[in-house]
Image (cartoon, rainbow over all chains, first blue to last red; front, side, top):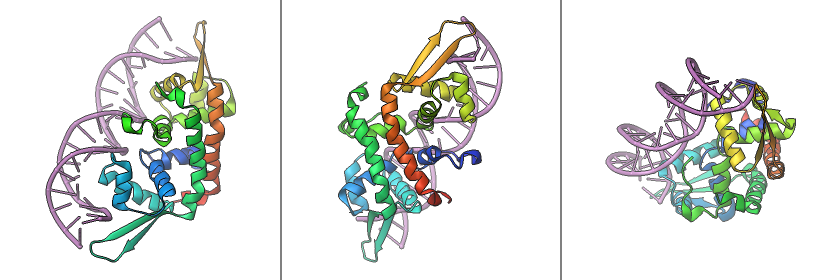
Amino acid sequence: MKELPIEYSHCPIRHVVDRFGDKWSMLILYILDTKGTLRFSEIQKEMIDISQKMLSSTLKRLEADKLVHRKVYPEVPPRVEYSLTEVGHSLMPHILSLTSWAKDHFEMFQR
Amino acid sequence: MKELPIEYSHCPIRHVVDRFGDKWSMLILYILDTKGTLRFSEIQKEMIDISQKMLSSTLKRLEADKLVHRKVYPEVPPRVEYSLTEVGHSLMPHILSLTSWAKDHFEMFQR
DNA sequence: CTGCATCCGATAGGATACTG
DNA sequence: CAGTATCCTATCGGATGCAG
């Protein structure tokens, strides 16, 4: 995803696409919303086809965006738990709104 | 965007990301929803930074998904008008729901 | 276990030129 | 005007190996 042109810095759609238009963000948010707090490996189990690299980098971005909270336990072996922040939770109804529409119009998705 | 794994063919989020996770789809839908029926060049004027290639291919995909209607006038020079279909319009409230959230949480977007 | 570093291929997407 | 064709680049994202 490229830099957002300055002249569009006010456009919410551009922001949304810029932030959630990647392959994994929405799905991770959805999983954390559904399952609650999860460890790194648990999230990966839920998705099967995501690589460690993408899970790691996507989580990092979501954390930077304050949508996901990352809690590290000072243990050996290390334990890290991920959960949605308040802001993250506030976003979910709007994502679910989109997916509910997708469900209703599911037939059109059977190309 | 890659092929959607079969085991996830029922997952609405995967579908949504697969269909609207690209750079331009949502924005084009938004513009057509706001401005109504527009010609090819008029859409492009609204976006400035989209290339002809991407506008063309994205419109084609949206048309294949029955979200956008394409009407050709048999004139010279040619005239083509694009507008949202009923299904396309039914999708908009859900996209706007997402963008309204983005507006509300706009501060966090000032990285 | 939870990552980061590196290498690498696929492809999304931009620039330009050309056509009916 | 409304595209198509071609070329090209950046980046997305996967595989593997390594570290704390």
